[in-house]
Amino acid sequence: MSPLPDAILEVSGLARLHGPGCGRCVAATGPEAGTNVCTNCGTVVACADIGFELMRGEVLGVIGESGSGKSSLVRLLHGDDTPTRGAVRFRDPAQPDAVVDLLALDARQARRLRNTRFGIVYQNPHLGLNFAVSAGGNIAERLLMSGEKRYARIRSRVAELLSRAEVPASRMDELPGRFSGGMQQRVQIARALATDPALLFLDEMTTGLDVSVQARILDLILELQHQLGVSMIAVTHDLGVIRMLASRTLVMKTGRIVESGLTDQILEDPQHAYTQQLVASAL
Image (cartoon, one colour):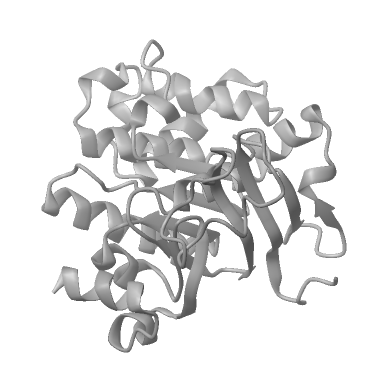
């Protein structure tokens, strides 16, 4: 299995099962069964048979209702959870001739890759930020993990990143708890971008924010993606977010991909009954 020449990420046969497993779990669950819980042994099939490619500089959307498996997929790809089986191969644009099997890395190698070449923005800022440390300190921590040791350089880089994320650099010494929800997300974005990652995960990052704040966050993401060319996987249940951000989209239901294609095609002419339901409910 060889990655496509311009693919930064290639995923095949990815699955995550929570429970004892019985050999019938995948066959007994999924969209046709209408459940992701195995009726034989009670195992929860968070996702199964997941396969796709992510191209360099592409924003790939993943949509689905709560429990569809989209956030489980992000956790697996980012390394927050361990797959039951499957393959995930990463081609770093900085080293295009080297293809890394993410599932073959030991804990130290996986942590280093996650801390330097990946970035993530969570729906809940408490997952992405340490609220006992200043906004600048949160970003500095990631810079330190990447090997930067010079205080003056770290301070300068923190100010630069906050400004890029439209957070006043003068607030770098304030605790995240003193920021609004939208500003906390901007600090998360600045932290995620600290190491110039090749791949950025956005996990329901605008959920719970006011519409006007959502729009400004999405505008910022699009601007940064245009400037930096970073590849992104954006997970959401909001079709408006997908329409604005993603060129291609995967639709997930009960842990499976039921439809994939160009975002405009999926939203304008959905083929799967579940996708049709999602689109109709958003009208």
